[in-house]
Length: 229
Length: 225
Image 1: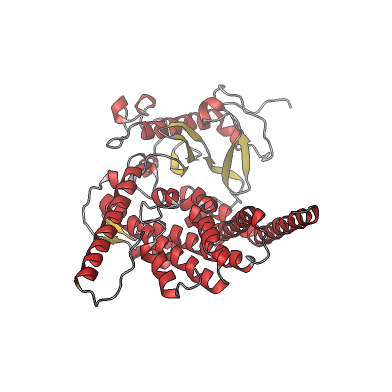
Image 2: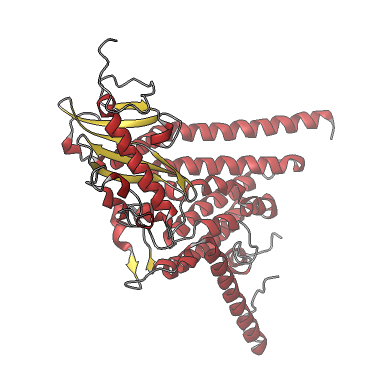
């Protein structure tokens, strides 16, 4: 376990064991708030922060937690961290907080967090747990942003609308009208659009994986490619 | 695990709970004023959109009267009415009414009404309507809600206060009639309420929370109190 290199940890989180595309964990916010790219990015950032902080905390206390009570302790750690993030967002990014609403406190129930705490952070030193949490968080965030961007583009023909909620007033006109005079495609914005979009992204990942595998077999001398289980 | 270990573990768990609580309490302590200020600012921004700051000189945010009228205000709970005054004279009021019959539950509205009974404007505060369909009532999504500004119970006449599908004057949305129907109805009722109670709404006693009479037309101040 402790032999996995940092690059393997990173690749696991971003690609081969991506929480959203391979483990399919934490789909509730993934499907609910990704109606546009900025929402996806914001939700991803909050989750990334929470999972990194919880991983480091769990790793720091891994020597003193008795195995019988580790789950309640992990839950306590995660709940405290997420509540701190929620209060801070409410104070400093109030409008964004209003948009994401209940899904910020619900990060507590995101099984990615407890999953990484149990499977990785409780068995690894803080630096490795940090890299693992960050990779998983960024991997999750990228999928949320990609899915949000897809749904926004297909659903209303724009990208980065409402960017000012996250980046301040200067970002108000970052909005890109990709398709002018677009009438909108409702299905993409409604919840079914999230399922279909996620399905398409997963299919795309599998196609790329299959290509990479075929290439690796055709050229035996090439880079060994990690294949997800 | 012997009893000593059990006690140690329990103490450890307790310490963690205490530490977590302390962390959250510390954050709360450092943010709650800012959060309250944010909420206040958001509401003030909405109020000032309906009633521009230069039309009144009182502290509209704190000049509140609470009134109750389940039939006309959409909820049996007390409803806050913010009052704008210029040199003590009534200018306008903002009623925080509810449209209870939206497509997905209640729609919270701010209805600004000038003293002469015309609408200063209407805004949606919160709703759960379908994204892409019913959410066009939100000023950020479409201009529909701006169409109320300047209207009154005489413009259009009372029976035209409905969406076009019901024979009224107001547009519905493609694929969504229920949401605009609910909003139009709530605004109409708020106007009726204002017309019947405007004198009492601007009564100087801002702490009054007793319900106003429901159906009396144009109440005057009682002669003896």
